Each structure stands twice: as structure tokens, then as C-alpha cells.
Image (cartoon, rainbow, N blue to C red; front, side, top):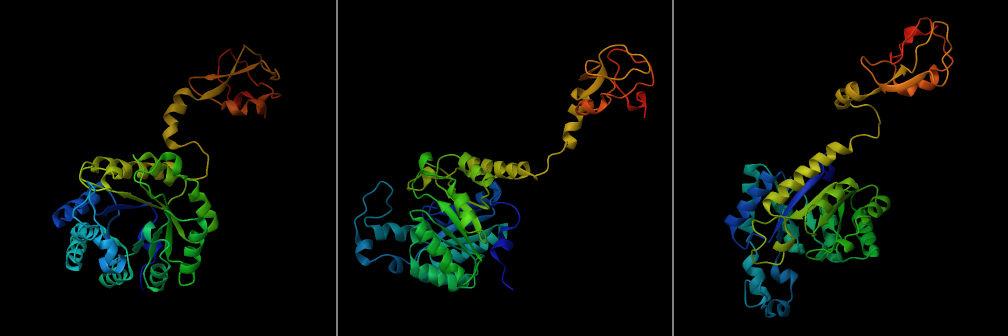
Amino acid sequence: MALTLRDILGDKTFIIAEIGQNHQGDIETAKKLIKAAKECGADCAKFQKTNLSAKFTQAALNRPYKSVNSFGETYGEHKAFLEFSENEFKILQEYAKEIGILFTASAMDIKSLEFLVDIGVPFVKIGSGDANNFLLIEEAARKNIPLVISTGMQSFETVKWIYDTVSRYKKNFALLHCVSAYPTPFEDINLRVLKLYQEEFPDIVIGYSGHELGIDISAAAVALGSKIIERHITLDKQQKGSDHKCSLELCEFKQLVTNIRNLEKSLGQTVKKIQPSEMECFQKLGKTIVYSKDLLKGHMLVYGDLDIKVAEPGGVDGSEINNIYGKILNTHVLIDENLQLEHLVT
């Protein structure tokens, strides 16, 4: 029986290291990034798979591309330089398996989708650029494989269409809130969309794919309930390529993973109680009830007879003081002596 997306994700936040095309078209660099993702604590290393003729028209491929980030004279040459062959993808998949990290890719077209399904990736990613590619999404929904779909550049009406379309075939998918700006201005991130998705689509996994600078917002997304975090990873932000500047270098990515894991521990349970780790401080500084004056046996305790202080040894917790008023002493007591229940007539 095939694993469901929830089986793959597990109980922790699932962290995807988006390598994308930050490998600069070099398979050895790609391997370094896979290894780095593993060492940083990511759960999955993700690439992008494109069949150029299936994704682009010939005119688009022939378009001159003179950007400082270009790897070719035309956009087609640029994309071809950065695209791994199917055999190279299999080599990278095997390498990821050897070092113990999941491997997958975004399917940029139907032919790439079929290839990724054939090689047995655990799930297929649909990027924001294809979130309105209804033909691709419908075909992906028909496949017996989990999907993770980013929703950048889309209206909420389109997001609902994605949900309704995929849901006709399965609930084995996730939607990621995403803003496709590189880097994303903080005022455009709108993390509260996570809550909208959770309310509107309660029966699927909701996550966040971030392109902002830094790591704080991605950790905040976890606090708001994101079960998947996807961030770009790079060996060097100064390398050529438009994604590097909004990617995380290895020290940043590792810190993000650490912060998320600490945050998961910190979220804890909806139960308020004294924690074992607090006992040392409580025993040193916890307040107990003491007598504010010398009192004789037979005296009925009233307001003004008692105080709450740090005492040695401790006695009755300060929160019990209102339950002590009206009690009768069965012994003589001294100022600053801590109240003990055996002092009281039962």
C-alpha cells in the first residue's frame, strides 16, 4: 500500500530544502547541496524538473536573455544549461537515498510529472508557477501519488479550485501558502493566510513556502500551525542566479531547523501546571503563608494575622490564604513562623 502524505510527513514539521536550480547546472554541486540539506537537518531535498519543449513555446525558448543571471544567450539556452537529464536525476535520487534524505522535485509539465512518478519520488511538488496550470493539476490529481502544491501568484478563488479539483480524486495532498516575490517584502507575506487555509481546508495538510529574507517568519509559520516549511538553500548567496539572494546559506538553514525543532518542543500542550523544571526555583523563591505576629493558642485567624513570604522551610502555599481565615489555632505561634496545617484545629 502506498504511503500517504501524512505518513511521509510524520508528526514533526516537515522541512524541505529547495535546491531548485541553485546547483548552477553542475551535478557535483547538486550533490553538495543534497548533503548540506541532510547535515542541516532537512527532511527532503527538492529540485525542479522541466521538459523544456513541454513547458515553453519555441518563441519563448528563442527569446534573448541578457540578464546578469543568464547561463545562455537565449532563455532556452539558459534553461537547458540548468536542467539535469533524466539519468542525472536518477543519480541524484540514488545519492540522496545513500545518505538518508528524501528526494523529490517540482513537476513543471506533464511529461516531467510522469517521469517523477515513474522513478518513485515520495511526493510530487507543484510550484506556484503551475498553480493555475489546470491541465497539469488535474493530471497530477489522477496519479496515485501525494501532492504538495504552492499557491503563490493565485487568487483565493483559484486556490479553492485547486482544492476542489484534487479533492475529487484524493485528500492526499497539501497546500502551501506562498508569495512569489524574490525576496518577499515582509508586508506582503500575510501569514494569517495559513489560518484561512486551515479553516477552509481542514481535511488536508497546510504549509508555508517562504522567499523572505532571514528565518524568523518561517519559524513563525510553524507557530501558526504550518506542518510543512519549504525554503531555498544555497552554498553562496553571491552566486549567479535569481534564487540565491532569497535562499538560506547553510548556517542559516541549520539555525532555522534548530529554531523549528525548539519551537515544536515549546508549543507543548494546552495544560497549565507547575513544570518539573520549575521546582528548583519554586523551592527557593516560592511564597508560603507565615504569621505576621505572635498569636496565642485558641486565636481565630483573621485578616492581618497572616502574610505571604519566602520562608525556610516552606509551608502552606500562598494561594491557600483565603481558606485559612476563620481557622482556630491549637498552639502558640511566632511572627514569621510558617503556617502548618497541624497548627489548626480540625
